Image 1 (cartoon, rainbow, N blue to C red):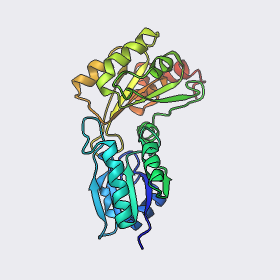
Image 2 (image 1 turned 180 degrees about the vertical axis):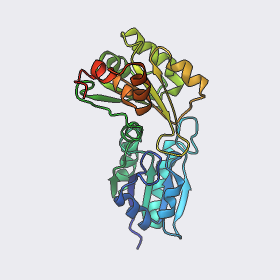
Image 3 (image 1 turned 90 degrees about the vertical axis):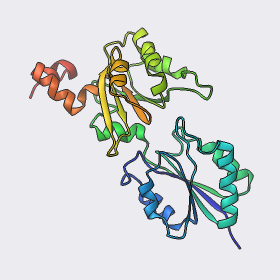
Length: 262
């Protein structure tokens, strides 16, 4: 008798080594894997050789299947084959629509488990040595989507732009200029910004600037999805930025961070 089971597994930010041991074990035991476009396909090397691997798309501008079709396929495959892994980029609960899949599994009477992953919102800035929080600079951070289900700019952007927090914006490249206009309207025109495309992978690209000029720089560099937008003074702590600023002003750390020069 086949006992269906579904595991929603976080694939991490892109680097195939940035996946948890528990996730690797889940892949090794699954009979079926439904994987997203943002999940590195190298992770499929952890799967058993006789497993069924099905690509289900799901990235901006690339939907191999609708969410409803994915839910139905997930249920059908789990009932037919047993343990199924739904492999999702980053963390399933960070803009991953995991709750919809959990509800579909529960309605079908199938046990479901979530195995957390490392979100790109945290890992990508860290990989470029940009802290989201830093004493004396930023005491908190926001993680927000750029657009809502309807395609409009999230109203949370307005609130984030008024705060002193570091702001990490996902899925927002199509609205970059309009979002930067919101930050500029809230007195942040000179605030540092970094855009990191395909972070933690060998295709990674980074562009830095300010709210005022980042849209122009991103267009010139042909920056595209998937990318994260990072707005805040912590961007100045990125190593290449520090080197450049120290060349201009040896007292950069004392001036910017209000720390005594060592």
